[in-house]
Image (cartoon, rainbow, N blue to C red):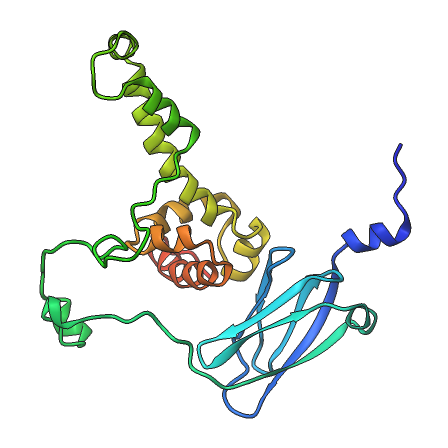
Length: 248
């Protein structure tokens, strides 16, 4: 039987930290509070108060559209007091530029929704971003590459006859999609999805499949930014609950 020192056990145990946000400008209600070290999340109430599980050295991130993002490292003093006061600074979150003119959009959602346009999907590749096509092969992709290179070598012929290449191609495609799905599904513990978003635990997998239908899903999942993923699932949870008639 292994016995850990008391200090080591305390380091691994999450304790409830209560806090209050203050700001000279802007509402302190509904500010996102994320423990990016222990994967916990919550939001502030109307008075800017919150409670979240944390341990020493964890990093708490505070974010809202009208505030500058702020990070606070949990110290021994904070742990002893069990309370923290965080001062937020007013600011505007810089959003990605959205170009409307190429699609003949007016900015009026009601009017633009009536238009149906076709065009090349906006992606890192179509925007001409650097290193867009850099390829980092997975194990299945490496196996697929080894299975045949376009000429009829003995190995390639055998793989073709056996159907191995076809199976590997299918596996590569499934791995790519599943990897992004897993990033969002396990970005936060089930308890966060249930408690903070009001989603039934037995519907979490279905919820992420619902998120996957959003055009921005792949981009957000690939970035693996906890805050962007959180903002995304908060937004999508509202539509999902409304669609499935799930009461708050």
